[in-house]
Image (tube, rainbow, N blue to C red; front, side, top):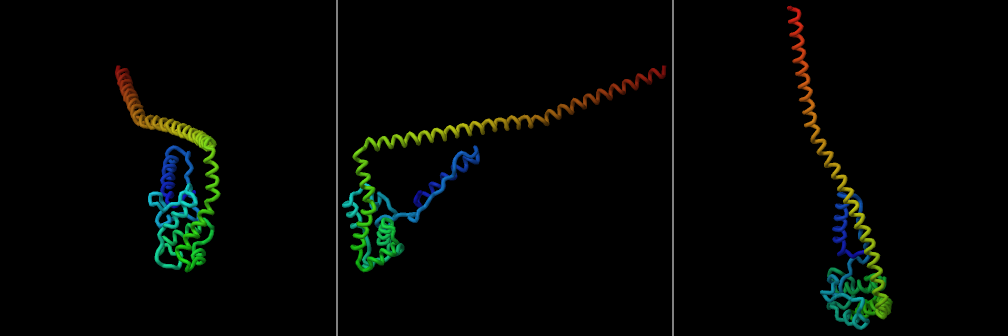
Length: 231
C-alpha cells in the first residue's frame, strides 16, 4: 500500500528486480503498488502534505495541537463552502481531510455546511480528525507507558527481517555461483569450438601428406616394374 508519490520508487524497484532476474534467473518478485481511493492526501493549505511545509497533522499531536493547526489554516474570502480543488485548493483540502476521516464525500460535507462559512468548516474538520485519531492516540499513550515492550517488538521485528534478508542473500549467492559455473562451461565450449577449425586443418594436411606419400610410392613401384620388365 502506497501513495501516488511512491509509485516511481516502486517502478525503479521493479526494473532492478527484472534486470537481475533476466541475468541470473528468477529470484526477486516484482512489486506492485496498491492504491486506495485516497492516492494523494493534500496538506491543510492545499499543497502536498509535508512536515517542511508545516501543513501536516502529526499522529503524535494532541487534540489541542490539532485544533490549533486546523484553525489557523488558510481559506478564501468566499463564504459559501464548495468542493473545487482547482479554484479553491485550501477549502477543498479541508473538505478532503474531513471526508477521509468520516468516510463521507467532500461534496456532501460542503453542501451540508453551505453558507456557514470557513469557521464552521474548520470546526467540522477539527471534530472529524480528533474523533478519527482518538483510538490511535489512546493506543499510542498506552505503548508509551511500556517502552520495554516497544523495544522487544522492534527487536523481534528486526530479527525476523534479518532472517528473511539472510535467506535471500544466500539464494542470491547460490544463483550467481550457478550462473558463474554455467558461464565457465560455455566459455570452455567456445574455446573447444574455436580449436575445431585448426584441428580439422591439421588433419587435412596430414591426409594430404599421406596421399602424396602413397602417390610417390606408387610411382616408385611402377618404375621398378618397368625396370624388371626391361631386364
